[in-house]
Image (cartoon, rainbow, N blue to C red; front, side):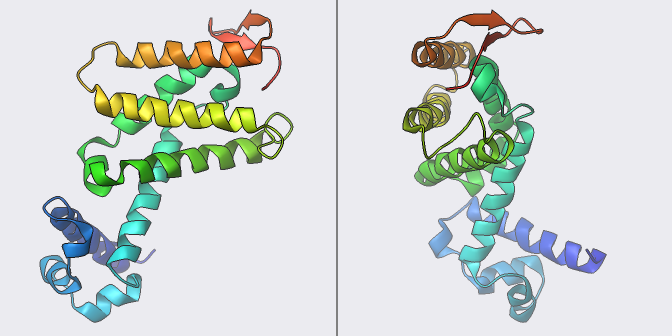
Length: 196
């Protein structure tokens, strides 16, 4: 990407984040955003259709960043406690920016997009083990692990043992529904012999 375009987009995004931290999305105008970014409206429209397109693109980048921070998405299938810990770390890695791009009123949207991203990953990389069309139970468990974990973190951010508690719950749920013999992986993780 041309350095000038990169700088322009960075100015737009920085201005948007500053405004978004202070007011709801629907109250941000192109005029105030472009003034703060030091560009004209025509330049803004070269990159984005409107303020909602800008917001959607930032949300998508953040979701990709969170999913990229999960080093082993396949742990959902093999080591749910570790999966939950990685999901937690990836979410925390976004810091205050996460609360700006996805304020409390949009926390459900964040969970929806995380779930869809993980589902896409599992279907692409583990098609033999993960068949979303044939395993409604697996989808329910994935939903629970994503939504349950995320909202438990949001609701109890000061709880010192929240990650371990949620991880143990995730592992117990998957173990129950698998109903299969456990084995121990090379890292001491609980593993299951076959997928859901």
